[in-house]
Image (cartoon, rainbow, N blue to C red; front, side, top):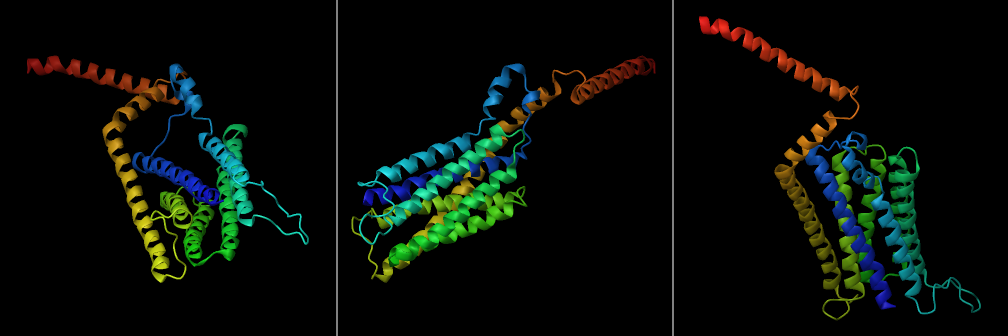
Length: 307
């Protein structure tokens, strides 16, 4: 049972942390390069097959796979299975915390289904649907966490209270993004909170179920409760430095490799297959102007020589 509860905290935290790290990388690149990707229809024919891969909702499928694996993990980690109601009289509900974990993982799977449907099924991608689905999932997670702490001890209560703080702030940011999704500031805060949520979930698994020292944390020791908050503050500093490191690496990558990539992208756009395209006409006009300037320069050069 202890191993199951540890896995129920560590593995979801590991996924959420790497999800936040990936999103932080994407947002950092967009902030630095002011990313305007070339449309697949403007790419050369030898790159159109590769460009189709980018249409696949890899993030959504990853949510579906991860949520499904975690769901099976919770179901099969119990010896007698996920029993909802006991057979004794009067009947009572069984395994309330495990059922809450199962609900969270099912929500993650459904959120992945919504993202896949928005990107690959609908005729036009609906960003409001995706962000609304994520905000709804975080809201339900917050409700489950609030009831999750009702049977918590002092150390566990402190750990989950700090997690509830992160989830609450994340819910506010996701709701704000429904109307202001183009603000990079909100996206950075969201990614930072995802990093905090993931790293603190992993830390919670070690504090509550697998202490590094081998001795459990004591509820009657005030120093243990105080150090829970201290560890949380260290996570805040570490994740902020991690986010800064991602931004610095993206900036370095952009300065070293972006100019050539931008030049290649601009050429691919200008040499679009359709000769009636706007970019092709601009290119032809620029070439014609260069020829006229060159002809005018040659016509003036003999008079200058005679003078």
